[in-house]
Structure formats: structure tokens, C-alpha cells
Length: 312
Image (cartoon, rainbow, N blue to C red; front, side, top):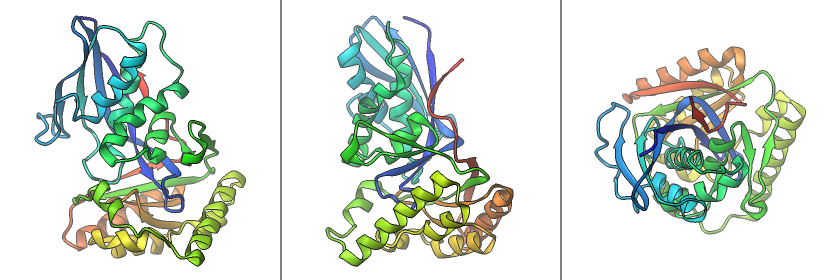
């Protein structure tokens, strides 16, 4: 058996409010780690999965056909590997949190296993393999968590352009605050609850908001970010799953946030803000959440957080 290689993949903010299934933002600090090593066997196996407390995870399977990490790793190994691979998965992202938990595992495993190859692939070539793991978890090829977790920063990756992704400039002086309430929302269930059709008026409004937001990021127009960071299509159908949503987003805006809405399908809630206001806004969001009797934790991140990488 070879030595273990460890890869870290960050959590992420899916949709970034205005870009359903198209925009994603990597987060600093929070993330998953996957350890990989070659074995004498064949295929990919999972030795163990451990949770945030360091104990064996009570819910995630070590069956290689039922774990996003091993499914992604196997997809890569089937094409480019030989022999066997063993994985250890260390979950740093809560499950069903709206923080790209399944994507982080899939990406970390893909990056770790890639490092075992005799000729590792360029990071740009890893996206399709990581997406195989995410497809198992969410039921579709949604890149808004996988792409930022893999590449870092703010990523625009609509399905129509895949495998091409667009790395957007991070507006200077703007940070992200993410609050995770002690709640869970199943992504697949949340997707099924969305309407099958959208009124043309709403669709045009959301398209305008997304285009304006992308332009604001490209031109570093902080005022325009504040005007466009709104979700008029998806948020109304999902916010009811998060008991503290109205209170937390109101607290964020009252404390100076440019805007605040769900991260992915929730329950996590994010805000974009001027960097100097980030800590105060995080504190206000936490206080609002706890006032509703719900425990929580928060993170503050730049908008150009690094993507997945092998740790020394």
C-alpha cells in the first residue's frame, strides 16, 4: 500500500441567490478532507467516514456505490487508474446544510485520487468526475457547488456551457457571511418542491437581476451588487423550510449587508457585505437565529477563497 494523500475541498454557496444552478462561491475554512492511497486490490473502497466530532459517521455509508466521494473517485479511476484505491472521508461540512456537503466530498476525493495517478490530470479536467458524485446526491448535473469547490472563488457555470466554466472576478472589498442554523433541508426534496413553470414576468425579472449581478462583479460596482442580489423565483418556495429565515436576513440587511438569502436549498443563509462590516453582520445573524431558539454557527469568507488542493 502507498502512503496516504490528503485533499481538502471547501464548502460552497450554491446559486449565490441570483443564479439558480449557475453561480457558486467557495468558502474559506469550512470543507471536507478525503485521504486516498493505492491498494493491492481493484476499484475504490471506503475504509471509514468520520463526522464533525471525529467519530464514525452515523449516517454516511462506506459502501462505495452509496458515497459521493467514492462514486466520484471511481469515475476517475475507471478511466485513468489501475489497481485499487482506499479512501478515508472526514466530513467538515454538515449534511443537508446548503453548504455543498456532497460536492465537497466528491471534489476532495477526485483531487486526492488524481494525485495518485502516474500522470495527474489538470484540475480543469476533473470537473466531470466530481460531478458524478454530486449527481448521485442531488439527482442532476448541478455545478453550482462542485465548480467553486474545485476551482475556488466565484464561478459561473450554466449547464448549457459545460464543460466550460467561467471564473468571475471577485469584487474587491466584498466578503461573504454564511450562517448555518442547526436545521436540515434535503436538497433533492427541495428541488421537487419547486414549480415546474415560472411566469414570464418573474423569469425576466430574475434574468435581469442575474445579468446585473454578473456585471456588478465584473465592474466592481458594489452598489449594483446590493440592488441585484435578490431571488424572486426560488426563494419564495424554499424560505418556509427555514424557520429563522426572515429574522436572519432582516438582521443582516439592518446591519449593513448588501443582500441576504438562502445558500443553495438552505437551511444555511448567506449575506454579501462590505468586508469591514462582515464580523458585525455575522454576529447579528447569529443573534437573530438564536433568538428563535435555533443554534447556529457562522463563517466569514473572502469572495476569492481557494479551491480544492492536496495538503502537504
